[in-house]
Length: 314
Image (tube, rainbow, N blue to C red; front, side):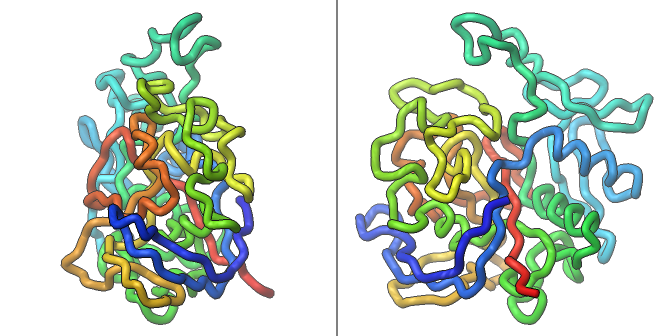
């Protein structure tokens, strides 16, 4: 993980297309994953979760059990006993465990002239078809492994806790998804750049996305595209997979704001996603594209995530 300094920056844009340019102050530094969470990392969580009765497996989906309120939500689409096409995570009934397995739709597209000329190993590709709930439960698992307080689902299902006290993301001690403001702070640091790598237009050396045609047509390794690293050293903040954020989607205000948390209206269920994906055009890769959104239960091949944790001052 990489430490992102606290501070004040300009969030959004003044181009009239997407969002209002406004001043944001983040009062706490935070750690953010250098890479998107991979298939192999997510499988480690799933195997722990199934051994602790935290998930149920059906024919093609996995539902996560909230241990506090017994709420279940779909967290991932998976292969079961070899069925399925796109998924890179397989559940083996006879062994009651998960493993990473090449997608049957991608595995044949290797060798010279294909997206994966040296072969296709999905272990280091970002996990996809994971819902916001599935990303949140992974964060809880990381907290559990380090004996930290689990942030999500402390009373009302696998959702965002209250905005006060330990429910405020900036007061959390455990792992969680970044707020939209934290994500943009990491991407724009420290010169309000248009893209994570600077202001130059995207190309297939900088981001896995679409520039005339698609660069790969599928995800790349989470550690790839080093030429497109942000100033702080983050990989694939633009392209590859849309990244879930903690916030419910909200409209920007032109007024300065400190430690924004997104909408607090419980009826607004959609969550912010950031960064674009492997089929996004350049206009969706800009750092200020902050109003992308999706329902938290959506499991599609363009959604993944990286983890965040507030910097603890001892």
